[in-house]
Length: 124
Picture 1 (cartoon, helix red, strand yellow):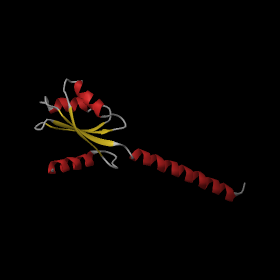
Picture 2 (picture 1 turned 135 degrees about the vertical axis):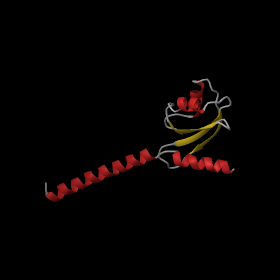
Picture 3 (picture 1 turned 120 degrees about the vertical axis):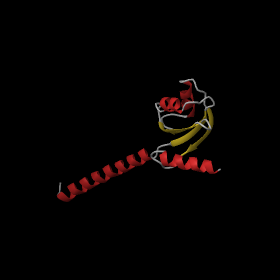
Picture 4 (picture 1 turned 90 degrees about the vertical axis):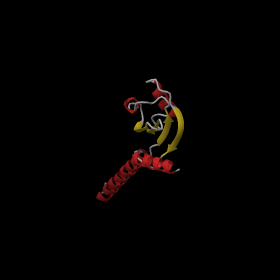
């Protein structure tokens, strides 16, 4: 083999590796992050909800509003769903009523987007 041919093969191998790496990063960044809101009528202790629900699979962020008796959960839809999260409340004897669910577009973690959604809901 000539040096030119060897360089050409190395370049092709490097380019193929780069393309595979780029595609892998794209897949990782395209997570299905969602926010669900539950109304928990018998909620009287935020700590109980937070301490139990944070261990549910796929939960990224959790916020409670004791005044409205609502719980907002940001979660990875590839790991869990609304029914599983709702069942998580039953583990510590709370009944959760589904209120709404929103999908977050193009975010690696739902923190910033969920805050925007909450602000929009407050304005309405």
